[in-house]
Each structure stands twice: as structure tokens, then as C-alpha cells.
Length: 512
Image 1: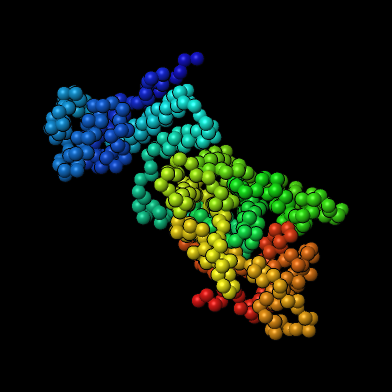
Image 2: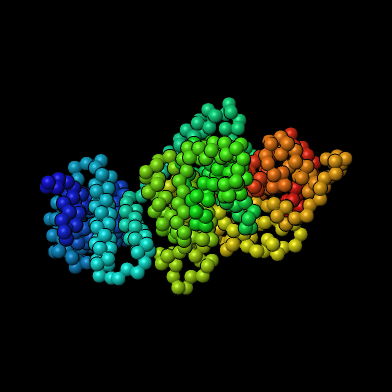
């Protein structure tokens, strides 16, 4: 079947390049007859957006006149082209008049600008694909995955060079904010819901400080190994999918997909993870696991467990998933230290801090471009363990923290006293809450919580302090949660027992 011709482009054949001579003439003609059009043209397109060499010459003349604060019209452009020794090549002032004559109305300027730019993007994409085809046919490819990732990146970069949105006036942005406030006001009847502007974290105490995971923001979860980073990230993922009603993508660079599903199932069924790993379960536990597994299966969660995934893979897969599932509302990467770098993000002179800077900035850009919150899990340095006293984590404990701390919008640091204090005392039954130390208080609370919820393994429950150490667009502060280690579940402390904790100091009270 013959290809359908588009009046704005040259049909693509081998060796041909897409362009529209009429659109290029109109854009240049508009710049010569209108000062406002000149400003729009010079701030929207560049010399290489024009395909015909004579149009590139005319654009250079327009740009030179504008930079010299000279008047721009057919006469001055003719003069400038003469200075450039290319007036005859362009076609003289007759051709400039021909371009100006194409402009019957400036209302078509935006349309013709888009035609010029989009044809330029298409040419770049076709040339990129030709280069990839040539490279594949003439070079020995040792790393096929790397070659494919680089090829995808090159095509994506070529496609991204379309017209960017113009500046918006404050009045336009204010109107958008007004609409957002109206939507928030509609929720004001439900105080708890009104606290969540972004994706629901599933914890009202965290929502009060963060207002949820907001679009375009990057949240860091930092802790030492085995403290609960992955468990908290998975809790957030399940809560976002079931309570926040959004699809969630998880890039697991350390753990395979079956292990993640088992962890999600353990936390939703309140069954010991070891039982899922060994298969040794009571009939009651089997029923809980089957119910939990079904709930996990029904949650809109996507898992990619590619070992050693590089940054380009994560970016490409995220964009593809967003294109296929418009409800994608949260991305989780576990964890930063395992993101592989490629030649696109690394050169021989780069040290690890520079690599992390590039990765951190790329993740931030991805969050903004997709308008989706991203949670990035990060391991804290050994300085936490080496620090004397209470080993309370700080922002400076983030590995290669400079870039991470700067780019992150929210930083959550997990602290568990029991991680460092293994031999805590048992509570004597005759003691009153006000007579107990802080450690004894949270032991009492965990025992009370086990009685309340019926959760197994009371020894596996500890009090966790989640320190929201940075919050670019909200409050900082500490949130206390229960962490049930045996099934990887974080829970809010029941209101009945908050008073017991409030009677004693928190680990962070002495920081100020």
C-alpha cells in the first residue's frame, strides 16, 4: 500500500529527510514582519531546527540583528546576509519577500513552529536509528544489554527535543492553585483525608508531617542493614496501592520478585516470614496466608527484579510503564547503592560521589518529568555504628550524602533502640508506667500491643522512631511506630498507649 503523503513533510524514504519548506518559510517570514513574532521564533527554535541551508542562513541573520539591537525587516536582513556573503545562495531579497508573503495571519505561528521543530526531532530520531543500525552491523557488540540500553537512551534524548512549554504568567498559575484549593476544601469534611495531598502513606502520623508522597518529589528512606528499610518501603507500596488507589512500580535490585511477594504476604497476613519460607504452617496460618496472598495479588503492584539494573534501564522502564498504565502513582527503587552506572553516567575520572550525584539528579529529574513521587532506599554509612551513645542516625550518615541530601525532598531515617541495645531488661509487674525508663516503657507498650492485636511473637516487636529529618515542602519531626520484625510490618501505635510513651523522652529529645 502506498504511503499517505502529509502536506507538511516530505515522505520518508531511504536517504530522505522529513521537513516542510512551507512551514520554515512561514516562520522566517513572520520573524521579519513582526517584532513579537521575532521574539517567539528566536526563543522557540534554533538554527539546526531548519533543514534547508538557506533557511539556516536567514535564521543566523535574524539572530545577529536581534543581538545587535538592530531593526529587523527585509531590508536589514538582506544587508546582514550580504555581510555573511550568502545573500545570493539564499536567493536574494526576492526570496525574503517570498517568505514574508506566506504570512497572511500571525495566528498560524505556533502551528508552523511545531511543524518545524517536530520535523527536526523526527530527523534526529531517524539519524540516530541509522547510526544504531550502522553500529550494529559493523561492530562486535560484547555487552548486548548495554548496547540496547544506550540505543534506547539515544532515541529518547532525540525525542525529548520537542518544543518545551512556554513560561506561564503568575495569573495562570494562581488559577491552577485556586482550583487545587477548591478540591482540597471539598475534602475538609474528612480531616484525615484532607491531610493527604499526595499518595497516602497509610500512616496518619506520617501524613500529618508529609501530606503524603507528593508528585515530582523524591523521598529517601535511610537506615543501617537489617533495620527495616525494605520492609518500610514495601509497607508504603502496599498502602499506596490499596489505600492510595494508585499503581506502584518496585525496582528491587537486591531481592528477587518471589521474596518480595512473600514479604508482602507476611506483612498483610501477620504470619511469620520464616513460615512462608519453610512451608511449615498451622492450618490457621495457611488460611491467613492464602487470604494475604490474594490481597497482594489484587494490588496494582509491578515488580522488576533485574539484578544490577542501571539508571537508563530504570528510566526507560518507568516511562514505558507510565505510558501503558496512566494510574502509575509511585515508584520505589531498592536500593541506591546497587544502581549500576553505564558509560552514559560515568567516565574514567568519576569517583563514587560523582556517580551518586548523577544518579541522584537523574532520579529527581525522572520524578519531575513523570510527575510521580519516587522513594529511593539508601543505606547509611558505618559512622552510625561507630558513633558513641545512642547511635541516632543523622543526615550526614547518608552514604555520599552531599548529592542525596541536596536532591531529596524528604529524608526519613529509621532508628530502632533494640538494634543496638540487645539486652534490655524485663519489666517487673509491680512497676507503674511513670516509674519506668524509656526502654521499659516501650517494652510495656509492645506487650500491651500484642495483647490488643493478637500478633504472634511479642519478642519480635520493637519500637521504631522514624525521623523525618528533611522535608522541603512540609514539617520535620519524629514519628513512633511499632515494627513487627517477624512479618515485616510497621504499625501505628494505638492511641491508648501514646500517653505512656509521651510520659517518657524520645531518643531524639536531646538533639536540640
